[in-house]
Image (tube, rainbow, N blue to C red):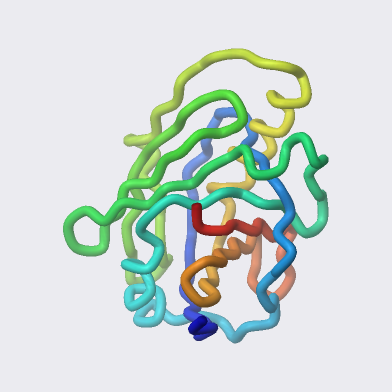
Length: 168
């Protein structure tokens, strides 16, 4: 298994006024002390994001076992530095686009965010709300090998939350 770490800057500035997205804790959690990424490293690793990912857990606010591995995050390559993003939060489906910006890294296009509006249990709705609040605040991502994705919410040096995903 190739355990090469690729790091890139991910700035998701859109406010997703949706509900939270949560899942199961992974037994393998990537190193959180990687050096700050560059735009070039981020671009080099973008194609590796393509595919489906499952939220396994959060570092600071762990999910309950019943909520683990239920939220998904999918990336699809579009033209140039643009990608389609989407998935299923605990209850609803969501989608949008993000692209590379030379100064800011990756930015979710707020004009393109869509979501279904179904209701669910209080636990599911709370989990969905937290997930979709954190996702656009992620500033950095790190890929470990081909099966582990880590999103850092807030600054890379002092994240307010870390989101762990595994490839489906």
